[in-house]
Length: 186
Image 1 (cartoon, rainbow, N blue to C red):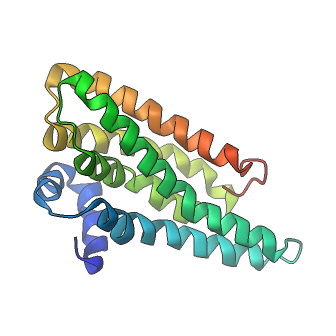
Image 2: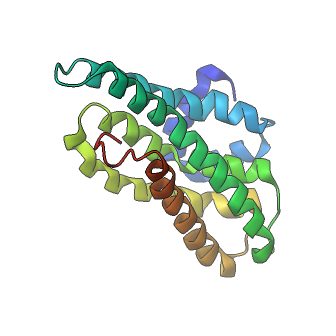
């Protein structure tokens, strides 16, 4: 994926995922390119907005703003990579292709709603209710699973549910390591 095409990818994965997964399948992108050209810019946008919003509050310190910004940048990347590794390990249980690059594509692009909502909620914690829209990521995962990993119809639901549970657990566990939830800004 070319760096300038991130907006097309976001639009297409959200509004025409069925056809977009086939484009993603044939793309020759490395794991590094997926993270740097897609995940990193979206996570960085949330980090920059958080830094600015928190820094502008007179009652909060720049050290808090920096900590939250770094975590807004790193946590999604760590969650995506860890989830891809774990899901790749599970893939053989579902008679699917064990291929880390394809799993990373599936997890990264399915994570798009989470990344976008992370940007929006960086503006104000009162927008946290929008996190319910993260569920759309599960639907994206569901639609991409047979394309990228050749999961059969009879195993697709269970694979999706287990993968969603892994991703949700990581989304909860990774920030807790840094005690971010107690700050109320992530």
